[in-house]
Image (cartoon, rainbow, N blue to C red):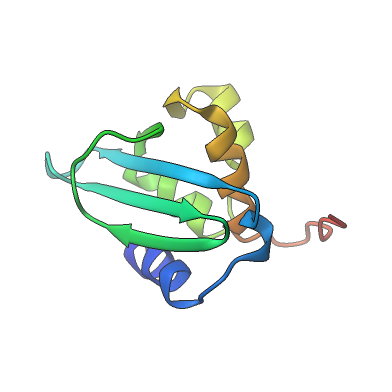
Length: 113
């Protein structure tokens, strides 16, 4: 599910919710293969995704199950960060911007912004 979500972001083209964002995120998944990571580049709404292991502005670490919940809209990234189930190094603001692309939980009101 994570791979489909991330590759889907890349194929969708421009993301207006990230129009002012620029930076890189690396997502490192715990509980999997040692090299199970994703590298996401955001350039003013354009998103590209790869599997490279490179330094990033924001490094996100989480269990695979937690990331699956985020991309399914079953969990909120900010709440997961506060609970400690998601750990971040570097530019936390990039995670807060990136979470705008995660689906909303079922029954949640749409964000007016």
